Image 1 (cartoon, rainbow, N blue to C red):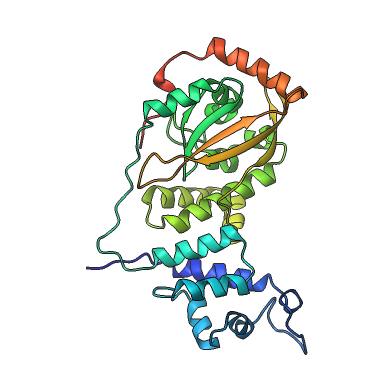
Image 2 (image 1 turned 180 degrees about the vertical axis):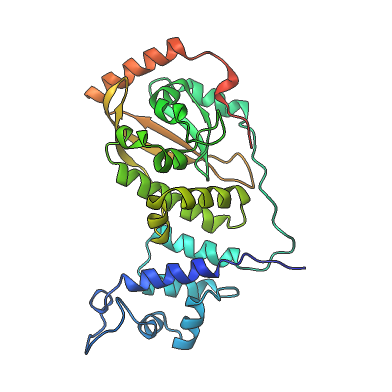
Length: 302
């Protein structure tokens, strides 16, 4: 029996929220009279996308299965979606297609030794690997020292397998660690939203989202906004309990380790000659003398 992901509520809410964020002026449509709804009307989006109002209304109710890529692209342009939002919309459409067999819990993969060797070879930058649920699955010594508050947290879930989402939303210590806590949690919720679009049947992901929704009002608010991030990088500032103030640049890179689960290699480094570089060097020196040289830095797969 064919099954498909029932993600109609996600499709409906995402499209309706993006429509509500646009005004006629932003898309070059004339305005006249009172508007009973914020943003664009459905019929206005339909005109911009070149489809009938009835068809777009059906799409916004979540009936996305079978819609062509050309039509989805037209809707994305009409709603002025950015690249990440467009990818999310296409992921929702893909997940709604009939599948030949029930989807099972994705099996986590162990980190190959070559990846750990790569991490260990990076000595002056913090390098770590995460999966789409934001579990830290491998790290070098400096990353372990940099994110000590995350590893030491009692809210991260499975012992020895920290999870950034649980730390940011469930541990009060995260407010002291991040200079921009709002930015950190906004990004975290948006990353999980994108992952849920790619893998809506991931049981572990749904359990994580359910846990955060139950325990964190801050997460519930951000989850309801349907913001999406896939590609990200930039600058983050931390109040480290040992190294003090740190301003670090970071860049995640896709890491192909499994055909069934996405992984990302992220590297944090400091601007050469900056006080943050001096602090990071001191932290690296401390980590090199205190971190045992052991494959224990690889965390067991779930």
